[in-house]
Image (cartoon, rainbow, N blue to C red; front, side, top):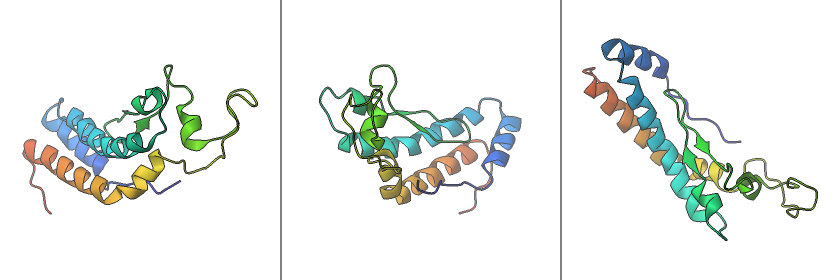
Length: 138
């Protein structure tokens, strides 16, 4: 799996935002959702479609410290199989799909869009800090 994008000082920023205003850390989650949405845009365009449920199942599931992409769920439990492959829930149903540890769509989106994601994070986190009244160095 590809490397994670680490943000130095995110925990400290969250603490300082909470001290300034209890509602400000929620803005961090929105900033991280924007980064996850970049991966989702990439993956949705490439996901195989019959009904479109698997592509529609891609959702931002970020916290104040982590950006995540959710996939599958009740309406498309097969979505992880489409991305990663494998045997399927029951042997032979669905048919075996070559297992790819790094996946075909979501992690590929992270690799391909990494520069854009870093720009989104830098801009969004800077905006959150400036809105809180902090000085931001470039």
